[in-house]
Image (tube, rainbow, N blue to C red; front, side):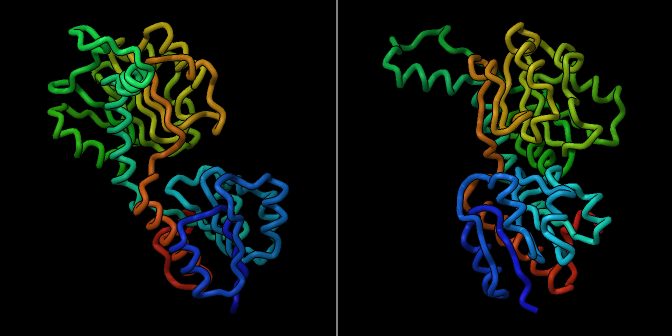
Length: 311
């Protein structure tokens, strides 16, 4: 059967070509940024397969717009909090994701962000570019040392494990907690860590996992890195924590209301802000596109698919 497929964004060409090899009717929104909701709902009408991005809202309204023939929603990314998975299962629609393939790239960027904020790399770049550098000084832009310090990893999945593996090269002690860890273990991590990186999925249990209580429990010399999802931390409270010195600094790749960023964050020197680049490495994004396409094709063909999140 020649299923009707819609791809909701521009993706690496390898994934699109794979879909077109199998089916003639493959349409794409060939732009970098998300479609308006009304346009997306119109575009999915009559489709059997959808390939969507992490910032495309896939809910009951979209399922109704698509129609009863919709069989699979393939998410381009490992996180799928943008999709109402329960509603999809109720309607018999498979939801897939792309785990594993982006692990190394995201772990690499975690370390890039951690080094950028702790060693004040962005501040140094600004100083050099502005022509205001007056020469070497023993006290200029001093940052944090790593050897002998403690790295706390919140989220012990693939990415968290890859971050921990890289920590050995920096002579760091590693503490880790997962969803199975106790609150006491989490609080120990907050107290003892010099650097905290976050890699948990966004769920009811992890929403605002970091708020005033947690930031105040951290060392005033500690740094907070969020590579997971923005609502895992309370953004307004983080601004207060950075301004008032509850913690030393932060590095963020994700935000509570993407693409909006709290204006307070943009005024601070002790935070490094990235535009959600965790998996943005060329080969990684190509493999993600291929995996997302393979997931979609497998479901439509009635073949086994290891990446269904609502079996």
